[in-house]
Length: 375
Image (cartoon, rainbow, N blue to C red):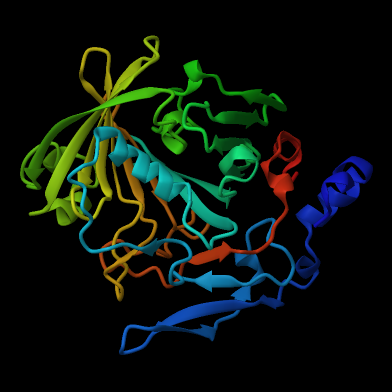
């Protein structure tokens, strides 16, 4: 991987290196990989499990290791079984989700993660869109919390579309967000007015990928209750079987967010959290008339199978209730739609590959890279 100057001096050479890493000339060659094995005492050891080149995401430096399934305290982290939230404000709940997904918790250095958007119309027809997420925490260096790039790989008509977010440590400073539109071959900065625009044809607004808790929203408590999957909204949402399993009998907290931007067509959020585990189970966007527009089921850090204190990523299930269109964000891949990498019910994702602490270049988090990408 060339340093920054290389892109200016030898752009064609760097693109060739990006598109055809050294290992690509021998597709049969396997990359190093480690798989977790849980011992009877609950400890985790790792065994060699090589990785086919075809499963290596673009941009992984030569010789970096991939991890099958989770690795203790890397992708997620341990949490106490019960967290005292009695003195939390409504804003604290939402900020905690941002802090977790912002990967403020060391020792993670970087992450590359392949996933898919599955777009589902009213008839149930699915369209798969594969993407790669590059995320790197900076822990306050240069005033930055983290940088995140979502890069679309497939299908061909949207390949190269990407969203770059730079999150600042200063909660009163707006995020820097850019989107690259391959059809126009232009990078455009996302303004506050565009945060409610749909990203890449999904049912999620740009705001959902990196919400600025303080700049764009004000927060208040709504209520506390015991979770009942037989009652609304849980009984009626896309993914109700999953959220029902999570919320049944759990102490829940509801908070409300009101957008500071009066011109946003969707200007209210209602979010539901586990009062003790501090995970988000459910979120909905409401329009100006107070009607539910978009629902989101998903938890960033559900329990891992052998470690009940461990939190890691899960899928998102999203529905635009106005149109009946749905979006499923999953670790499974469109090019292998029959293979399940991430089983949400059994909590088994041993077939899912994670790449972290690879040492990939900061060049990924630039508009110059968005324009060139893997083309």
